Length: 640
Image (cartoon, rainbow, N blue to C red; front, side, top):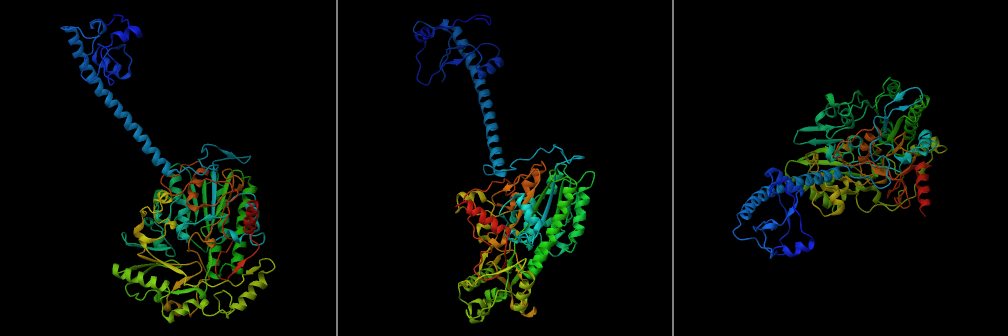
């Protein structure tokens, strides 16, 4: 039969009558006796006229070579030639078919793996979220006279707790939150200290994954000691892990300028911000404001501007969470923010520039009534190296046995197996007939009168009623491989949510963790007898961050306005989420592999169930008339 011959296929009835006897596994298959390559491709694609065939080494015969019973005619050389030709073609075609299928499977598997990785690195935000995808970077925004690229101004008020806001202490911020994108609080990362959380805000990573595991730590592998107060250590590029936002943006040709952000003045080289003002905690707010305005007035302003304000944090540490110094610091930073907003309004930039105001953590009151003496908790400190303190205490030891001895000693102490000499650590358990207020100054009455005289009219202080004292001394002890999972020193966070009993996998910078941690409960601090005596038996500071990041007093602040942040009240979120939100506000794509993903979800019934500020089991002074207390009450009332 030639290539040009027309083949008349039988009807269904005829086909039934002439089909060879087949098993249930035998099927029809296409066949063509043309060129081998053409036959193979046609076989794969199924494009050639069908002819009778059977698989498994059986015969392949054209219709005219079958007898009435459907069997091949004996001695037919043409049948044998056809069979040989077909077997050759079908074997070659089958090999190519297998290769084709395998290639397809590889493609499918690759897509599945890529999708799985992408979904892990880009976890979809909750339903109904805002700013879940980057904005269009190419859109130009106009103030009426000039066109601007997308621009975001990020300002950090270190130590600012949402509770501090009121129409008297922070008149500008009080109005700002009423017209902005705002959450009840932003959850800091553990430890809730300054440098770890500022680095989390702009990398989207938990401290164990970006390397700044505390304000002080020791990297055993690199033999690097980091201290946030020592420029010789915090300017070392090697200590700062992860990819900061200025590096992400530089890769996408987006300009940045930074004023005093922790980590910005390290030796970044080409990966650093386009412009940096070095870290100087004493820089006047007027200079900082002038710097921001100068950026705004440039022909092409930096698209991301960042500034750090330490004033509230400094006042809280020095004088506590209800002092006139803290109130004064709140008024100062509030005035600075008012001046920045005035500059935006004057230039008609409020619908061009995103103004994002955050804090790194809150603050807790400390007192001599809540001191822990480390040399009582651990019997032998001779073979111990202090790595971090204030309030989280990290300890390293010469040998593993030394560490285990210290661990058992601390456990026994926490369980109450301590000598009488340790009773002075816990003055608040001595007797209830001492009606002393919770303040760390010797001239307590004078300070109380001073606070009330100067602030009761405008900034009243709440003197809480006496509550039952904690029975046990307030701290926990943890080996580095036994830290609570809610502090996110393990990296398989998604797995842990599904299976809390899963084996923890520690992050990249586990080598920077201390061997043993003494973690005080909120409001407690750790010292030694020698340090206490050297300080003339007076405990300082009067306020500290660094406690459990889930504590009410540790909460951070977030509010924003601008084209990328629609006005509304949204659910609280972790500060690991902010990095991706900042990127998207500029139309930039965040780096893969972060620990958070920004997506604002409106507040609904049942979203606010937390205890109110300050959430403490002991007496302390607190500021009254908080706007956020009213905020909580309003939301809770709407849920009834």
